[in-house]
Length: 388
Image (cartoon, rainbow, N blue to C red; front, side, top):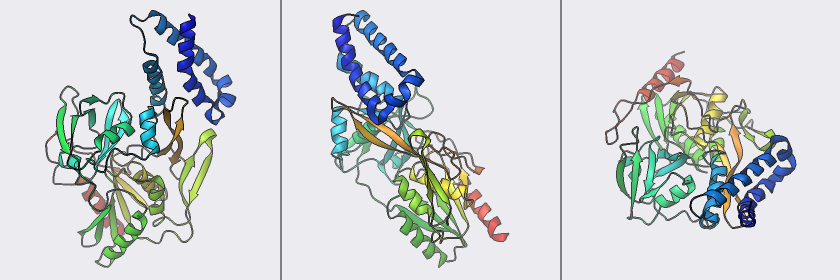
């Protein structure tokens, strides 16, 4: 290896080694899991590239690529952030006051987790599971979900252009959307039939528990004896807000388990004063159910408080925090995951429904069918429980 190559390898490796030292990782893991050998191989690869590639290699680009690969290999929510993105994150700069209502994760391209009810994205027919291949002509292949969501935001009335993939990657759909400020309620209700209340949770917030309490109380006064809570496409909200809402329905039992490093497990347990809402429930779930909605659903399902009806949830139940690197870039790293009351994983696994209802396949631009099979099945199950 040349002297120049060694200098460049050191420049590239320093942030990675700094990351490894955080949390005492080197002290506990390197010797036993072959990390030293892996770093030696990394050094050899960088040296070979610098000495043999047909064109001069930009050191900064190589470093960013290495860090991206490291973070991307962990889970879809972890990411490498450039110094500019770190500065935006620390300043709580979301990109603008208006958006198009999309929640994103990373899966090769950026993948749509959900489109908020009534948002520009929802009105355009964008659905959970769609892929965003480009934002304003910027490819999303190596883009973090944080960066993608920031690019979607801006001033009200401005336009953002998307290239959307559904099903066939060779047939992307260009979509221009006008950014809007978020409008609408977090929770909406109606009577599904004479004895069943329907509650649509658009997103979870610090007010969700009190709003659910008020909604159920109001519908009980209108004759509701059971309830369907619709969590399909519900992915926005803090995980602890989902736990707080679950306390309405689960009394004096484990609601979830927080999993930290070294398999450290912290049970989250309900109080004897919890569980004031005792009416029969069913929960509607799908691939857009994530985060706070998943821990809420897991708490109720795991304590046999409600049946899950629909299709598998996404599997996103974790928290991330920023680890800054010497060059002011950073790693957005998952540091805790939430498990079901029984200790089973939710993150990257999702929740399986108790009663599966196949989701209809909808061509891009087509309307969803008027009949809601999952809701009909939920109403049937609740009618049987009330009759028993």
